[in-house]
Length: 334
Image (cartoon, rainbow, N blue to C red):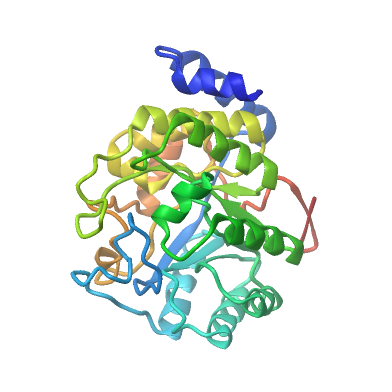
């Protein structure tokens, strides 16, 4: 699709059936019918950033913060692996309490559990940190770009720049990480042209993964009184991302389940998604990871139910990038 075609499918009324069918055909051709499961551990709700939309923002004094101990994180990871899930996602705010050495130790302990993939989502760190974690065995790094419009990005992320984030994604790719970006749909001040640029950003970076979900407000943030993003528009962006990127790994996000608890993720799978990420964060911590309000709790059981309801196959594999070739437990990506 060229830019005009993408905008046409973003703007035009009553075009969903045609678009969604095309996206599902592209998904089937380039990705097959398997849906990959990733187990998330949200291990810290502390964050040094002050993003306007996020409940973890530094200035949110209403949030009850927590940090999981390193051994505690490893114990939860072992439960995930024992449940048959072979990708662990370690996610937190930008929390420098966890040093290069601490996270390296956690990664090494998880990698000792078998042929398990480790995805990190811990924000912007020093290049030496990224290098050390790759050497420790980390496979993937998720660093969502959120908004490809530089002015919108900088408004939403005080003191940060889209240029730096783009540069870090390129560096992570050169280091050998499978990289993930992704955007929020329905941000205040966002236009359809911005969403077009988000989709093209994913294609330009040749990402391995892309997390695309709707904006959902958190009451203790500057954007707390704005409405949630539109479910239909989010599904359109997800479908267009599938068509444009072809074989990128696209999750049916928890935010979709938050907007529509019964069918949100199911619809995501129907329009091109091929990943679901159930939350294994222990009770007592999970409810404090308030990136947005009324966050759905997607369990492993629920994830499997949705996959089967979508008439898709539950994958038992690590679900490495479809741009990569696996050989003797090593992934080579192009």
